Image 1: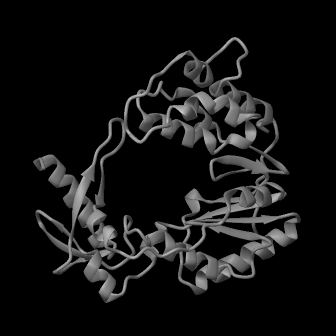
Image 2 (image 1 turned 90 degrees about the vertical axis):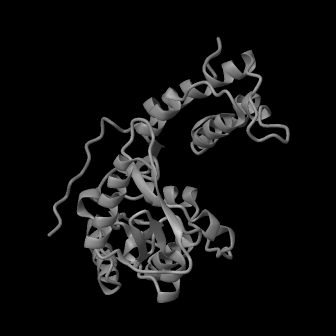
Image 3 (image 1 turned 180 degrees about the horizontal axis):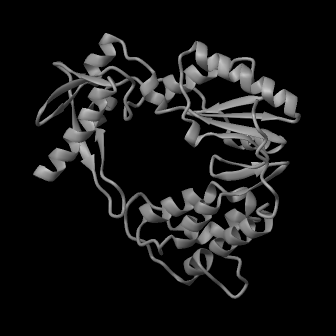
Length: 302
């Protein structure tokens, strides 16, 4: 690791020390702190828990069905989205968990005092916490990891629903980040969609990512494109038929091999005389269903 990379890690560790997210300590179980760098993105630190995760018993807690959430939220007239400030860091760790979650660097060993990212069961504990917190609020509030959607048909009801959720967050000593929240909107960006007033459309940024996706050269890239586009398949009539040439590329035991990219694949991916390919279908869905001409509501909360 270069001196520059070490300085970046030191800076990140110092921030966590100041926030009392971690503390110096020793442990007989440690995982390495590494730096992840990608072109065009800011370098970020993360703890490589891969060895610990391999020997950790998996805990299961069902995540909410995204399609059901989108249907419920999009039907509302007033919608608020709450973003919990670094949600995982709001969950304290027991001394035993701190022992196993400790991490090591070239400049010391540290113990997380709060739930770190990367532990395989972190989503399980966080989802269970949010589900218990919002128990009996299913008709107007829905959690999805560190986001909470609050949705109402009437303005007075929305104020009551907001207060109910705020009271629950306060009692649990959980905090939201106002700059990332959306309050009392007619339309909101939610789970990669724009929803509200009984309308929904794929998110513009995600559609742009699909549009700019390069021609895949191996199965991993094909799988990534189909996963991204498949998330929005409800907007594309006969999606499975159009995508069939790409799906066929994934056949065979070798999950990472190169692919035989032919004209059928190219037509499904990027173009044909009938224009039934995936990229133009997503762009058409965005244009035809996007309520960009509608005025977004900003009621004042008293």
